[in-house]
Length: 197
Figure 1: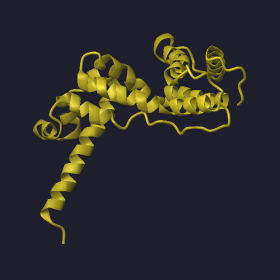
Figure 2 (figure 1 turned 90 degrees about the horizontal axis):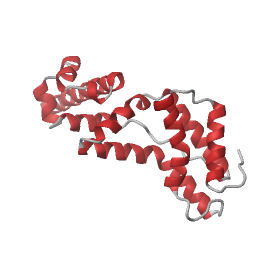
Figure 3 (figure 1 turned 120 degrees about the horizontal axis):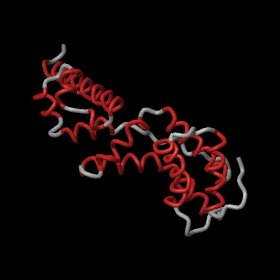
């Protein structure tokens, strides 16, 4: 026989899920600036009082709503740093073209400049998305393919920088030819002589 507490827990879970879903919808449509507790309440059917009972601030709600976006891609192991970098760069370009987080990230970056809670969210999201680059970089250094003074930050800057520029500033296509040039330039900049795909 179900206990009354079980029904309460189910209702709480449903209302929280509805709030988080509507928050994410608003984020996707209009960035962080497009999210208000009033609008989340109206769309989800959950009262503002209940929302504030679970999340003490708008920032806390945003942090939880964004906590699952931008999952890290699997770490490739092609047998070479060049091959691994190609695989990761192609995946990042695809994510920037099609993933919902790519539309939300600029507003997170903007808000992170002013709100400490959102700065933490931005740092976590960045670390999660870039973690595979760190893994392949450390593996390449251990195999002697990459100089010891070239770390994950060097690799991600050489690859992510041009992709982010095209996605959010020049709005030029992130096509296969451009991605291939980015990897080739990055490997040259990092002092890697040959690329294996």
